[in-house]
Length: 312
Image (cartoon, rainbow, N blue to C red; front, side, top):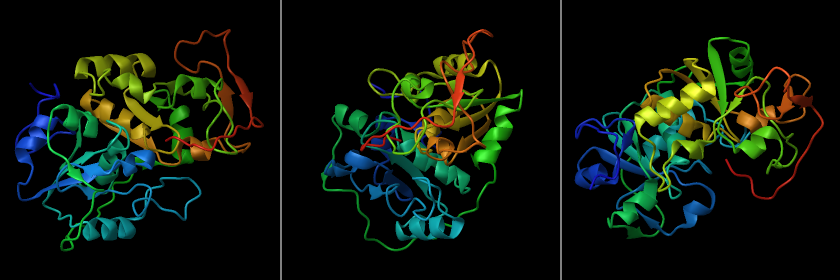
């Protein structure tokens, strides 16, 4: 039985592949499988056979930047991928231990660096094991020869705070937030120290989990399209944010599957915008979608929250 309803070519995967597709291709020359798990999911102690580490908590983030999970520069990204044996001609499938979570970030990063032959494993490692497919003990690893990959950055796929501010002022654009509705509305505390609660005025809430079925697979394209239409108010230029630029990429994946093409991810996301700043206003309440004129959000620059467990 197929594990994903998004059809793909056996030669060229789309942005999403099922466990059955990957199982049929596993071991083929030129196929590289990356495990992009973050946090506790990196300690699962098992991997899809041959999986290599796409370490978003390590070399594949810029640790000199103030926000977590910041995209590294082209030279550092090239070096990290070459050290993992990636060639320009390879095909990549990325998965994570949570389902479709941080794997979408790795997929979007590859696209932003000019590499298109990459796909996310639908349902991730949980879908793979649920299908009874084999796993190896131990963390993902790679000890082979260096690859020939070269980053070719595409400006515009990752944007900064100024780019998001421009989108908020653009009547043709929608800024969609992948965090939970409670964090978006400011009724739940932000898990990272020093961040204000709430959202960017004019943005809309679309929690990334709402794009997934109960078993963790991505919803069919028609359902994804309906979710984006509702959240964006029918706008076609979509910009995505979350806690640290990771689950925003799940929205980018869903939008791509739904047929949207003018897409960008706010790299700093709430880890940057939520810092105290008079230049970046914060609103509380339900946000842009579903709000009547009399139900305007409250704005604040002084609300702080604390947690020891920052999710993405």
